[in-house]
Amino acid sequence: MTNALPEITRSDLDPEDSIVILTGAGISKESGLDTFRDADGIWKKVRLEDVATPEGFARDPDGVHAFYNARRRTLLDTEVVPNAAHEALVRLEREWPGGVLLVTQNIDDLHERAGSSPENLIHMHGELFKVRCDPCGVIFDWRTDLSRQDPCPACGRPEGLRPHVVWFGEMPLDMERIHHALTRCGLFLSIGTSGTVYPAAGFVQVAKLEADAHTVELNLEAGEGSSLFDQHVHDLASRAVPAFVDMLLAGL
Ligand code: BJW
Image 1 (tube, protein in one colour):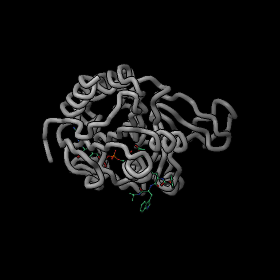
Image 2 (image 1 turned 180 degrees about the vertical axis):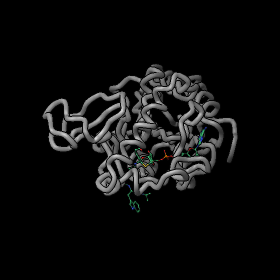
Image 3 (image 1 turned 90 degrees about the horizontal axis):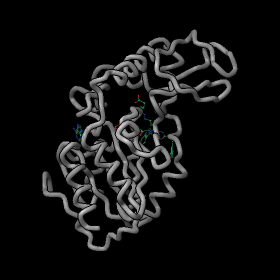
């Protein structure tokens, strides 16, 4: 089913059921940020092995810093702002009685800027506006360019700072809390993600098999694991998400 008017097909979704939402790069596309795997995506311009693996960083730290510095500057561009999809999720979080956990694979801060509350938001792949010192483990807010020469503000060691993001082969963040929420939710929404990167791509199965949740894919097109979802809305996030949220809240 594509472009269908969104409606919850399962009749037993209770307002007290919790909702887990997974977002990916597609939700930020209409805010001016590139996705990874679309025709004009980031992985068409750079090799992920070079910029999104610990091995790539060890080989060429300056090149990896340049890649994340450029993305940090883009995110600071005044034209990059949250869109109607980010805003609709704020409404859902504020008004849904059963509670909402928002898990984003995105390292941008558009959910925060739209108004999502930090206590219900997990950046499972890290944050662009944070850096981490590998030797001492301290995490810092960081909005400017980062270079190899920058000493750690905590331990003073040079060459130890890196973007606080999760590269291939590294463990995503807050997995225990995410798993706990997935195994108890009544509704799982996957928004703007191609479903190619694990463990996020497996969340739909956890929600279905362990919580018997209703699962919905809201994406421009069918993602990798599309057949695993109960319901599909294939449209722009800025249209699909507000419409879906309106429908959920109208049923209260
Ligand atoms: C729109 C739209 C609009 C466009 N409206 N929609 C073999 C089999 C299975 C797994 C593995 C394997 N070999 C290795 C692995 C594990 C590996 C993995 O999954 N690899 C796959 C590639 C196969 N995963 C890992 O290594 C992860 N760690 C891990 O597994 O640890 C072990 C572990 C074990 C057990 C439990 C837990 C952990 C780490 C993955 C780290 C990913 N990091 C990146 C970079 C982060 C920093 C950065 O941003 O630079 O994260 S890669 C990149 O992909 C980024 C994204 O978060 C992630 C997902 O991408 P996303 O968001 O889905 O974007 P796209 O572009 O793929 O899709 C966008 C979608 O939007 C498209 O479908 C469009 O159609 C749609 N769209 N415009 C709505 N306007």
